[in-house]
Length: 174
Image 1 (cartoon, rainbow, N blue to C red):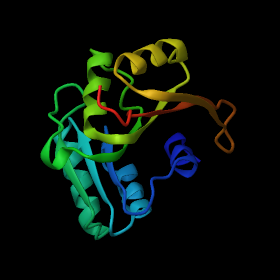
Image 2 (image 1 turned 180 degrees about the vertical axis):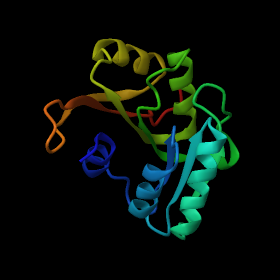
Image 3 (image 1 turned 60 degrees about the vertical axis):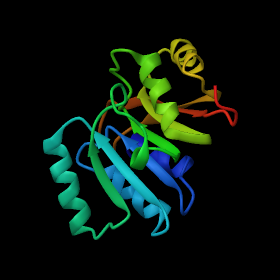
Image 4 (image 1 turned 90 degrees about the horizontal axis):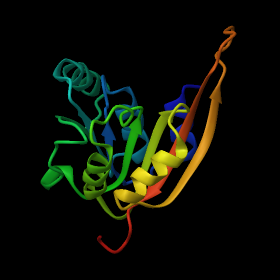
C-alpha cells in the first residue's frame, strides 16, 4: 500500500467534509478523497502544473466525480478565499517537501482551514521532525503528531519510509 493510501486509511476525512488536496498532480488521491467524503462532501485539487490538472480533470469526468474540482496554484502564493477556503482537511502527499518559504506557506495553508481543521501531511522520513514541528508551530498549528510509516513493496529488496504528520488549526484565530 503506498504512503498516501496508508495516510488516508489512518486519517480518512469524514463523510461530507470539505478537503483541499495540495499538490494533487494527476488527481489520483483527489479522486480517492472524493470517494471518502461522498456526494455531500467536496474536494479541491490544487497543483502548479496545468498539464497534470488537465489529466486530473479528465480522470474526474471519466469517474463521474461531481464533488471534485481542480485549480492551478500552490501553497505559497495561492489566495485561500472564496472557493478555496473553509476546508475541514488539507491533505498533502509529498506536496510540502520543497517549499521555498515553508513557514509562510504553512501559515497560508492554515488560513485555508476552518477553525479546528486538520492538516494531514505525508513527507519522506528524511524530513527532520524537530524542524518540521518548529515550522508548523511557527505557522500557528497545534496538536502536532508524527507517525512513522515503512513500506516494503512485494518482491522489492528496498523499501521506503515516510512520516504522516497531523496538525490542527486552532479554534481561536491567531
